[in-house]
Image 1 (tube, rainbow, N blue to C red):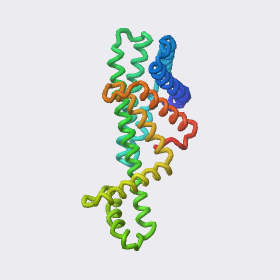
Image 2 (cartoon, rainbow, N blue to C red):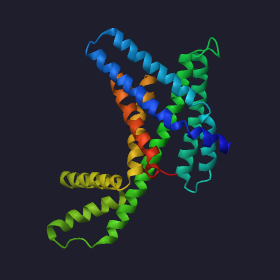
Image 3 (cartoon, rainbow, N blue to C red):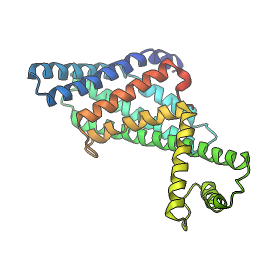
Image 4 (tube, one colour):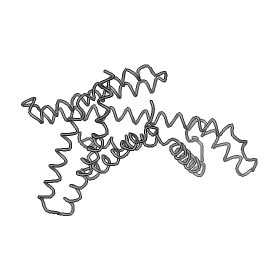
Length: 263
């Protein structure tokens, strides 16, 4: 199994490049449609997008094995939240790839009379579940880093002795320790707390590029199955933009492995 995983990773770079090209074609086709360009060019772009999608499905053959292997690794993590999110996420990815392989077999005629729409919806449901778990993991990692930042700031330096800031600092310190807005806070205090929290989140993400890239990638990807399943339809223009952006981020993490969020 390890040898297959090593062999399979060699095609992931090509799949990511094709993915970026596929969603670029989707975005281009949407732009041409809005610009009322000749239908022949639109049809060519649409056919090119379909061919790239089919080629990607071919390159993803056997990815279920890699996802199952990853699940076998993450199930031994000490952190229960990470263990749950990552393991179930990898299992959903394995099911997504398996359904995707069935769709590919139906498209090329290996499986005749296959209900491709049904299997497509089934694969996107597994894809959506996996992305929800990935986003949950990212938010959990962010919360851990914010807690560490709160602990560090509380022990870094004493509060200002200015009387005008003492009351505000006291209210903010009680809210920052619990990471929630104080119930009896005035609108001014709530606004200061919100600005402080947003700045803190931005600082934490800026100092942790792997988490930032993973959160952006998953945030973009999640709109794809939401649109395909009809849960939240955004249109080919938005889906193409999100798919292109997430593909570029994936390529960046493959070119620079230190930017990939671990485990």
